[in-house]
Amino acid sequence: KIELQHGAHRTGKRTDADMQTWRTYGLGQFIHWGAYSLLGGKYNGEYYNGAAEWIRVWNKVPNAVYDNLYKQFNPQQYNPTQWAAMAKQMGVKYLTFTTKHHDGFCLWPSKTTSYTIAGTPYKKDIIKPLVEAYTKAGIDVYLYFSVMDWSHPDWRYDLKTREDTIAFDRFKKFTKDQLTELLTLYPETKGLWFDGTWDNSWKKSGAFTDSLEQYLKALRPGLIIGSRLRADDLGNRHNDANGLLMGDYEQGWERKIPKTYADVHGNDWDCVMTIPENGWGYQEKWLGHWKTSNELIEMLAQCVSLGGNLVVNFGPKGDGSFRPEEMTAAKDIGAWMKINSNAIYNCEYAGWEKQDWGYYTKRTGENKYYMIVFNVPVSGSLKVQPPRNWTVTKATLLGDATKNISLEKIDYGGSFIHLPKGFSTGKPFVIELETQKAT
Ligand SMILES: C[C@@H]1N[C@@H](C#Cc2ccccc2)[C@H](O)[C@@H]1O
Image (cartoon, rainbow, N blue to C red; front, side, top):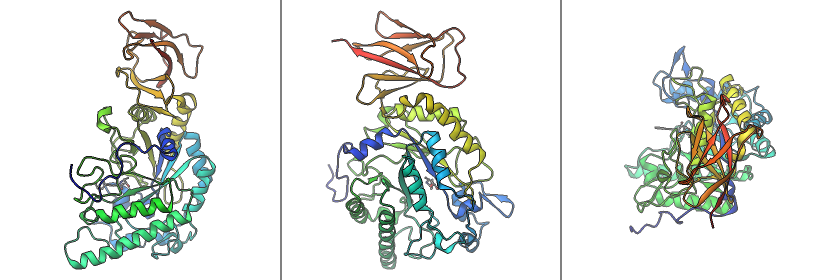
């Protein structure tokens, strides 16, 4: 065991009520919105082939052009109540929203810089009405905050000289002041989602990251902060030098999903996922494959079946409107959740032997299991192999209990669930299993 001052201060999961609520969410929404949304990944008629919110690093966009974009930010279509209604219909339980991305443009009227919404034609605070609308809709709000800030003169990628250290000390105070503003102005905030913490300057600031986390949690007791904030004494991130998670949940699953339960190492976790292959801010031309609603639903099932949550990203246009593909995804997922959300909310890893037809989830605290089915075998029979001494006593199709699916117990343990001839819903479906353990 390596002696650390600024490693993990807790082993195992957080067990308080706020974190238990976090565990029940299942489905979240990410929203990336900022100055980059005005360009949509395009400049002078050419498309940037990277993530649209990173367009400032494209050499075809002069920094001076990008850094003055905010003077055009005037989102007349911005309607946080409508945004919250779309999220509610989709079945989302938590929102993560970009208060400041890597470019440093603040969507709240910060007093720490002039590079804020107050300096735009729109003028008004974006965050407050959004937090209020989502909270009123029963959706918990988490605020995304990029530590890396390309606009700030004291930002450093590394600390090589004494001057670097003096400048970065000023930057750390600036960061703490901005975070204090956010938690003070928006006390409903349930947590902070940190990003832009991969550079050496931050890795060399382990003591500061530790004291900052403690400061923020004292300011807002119960605050939930993932594993992207901290660095340990040796510059390790996410897990400290002893392999212990520094944060309330594992935040490494960006555009990737664990393959097995072993991959999550007993941590809480969520996966943040784009609908296009990459790109979080609005991009006029989506690059590569766009995930269908069924693919997103399968990712949701995968995440919940391995004890995590899925957070689907939306990138509104500069005017505050959403693109049709995103509205369709929200509608389709919402329609599926309306019938099947019992297999998602308040569910956890089932621990049963995975079968080819899809994914199991288990309702927390109950002997109720769910089969989320994506692949019906040619036989039309779905094999269920619970652990020894467990038997399935009842199987019900969610949304249409009249559909006569039959349950056949197998002598050597387990069951088959026979679907009616020609059964097809054309979309994933859920079978609820009631079980009991042999005494
Ligand atoms: C949640 C996502 N994290 C940000 C990033 C990144 C990134 C940076 C370098 C290499 C790979 C990924 C994206 O801009 C988006 O905000």
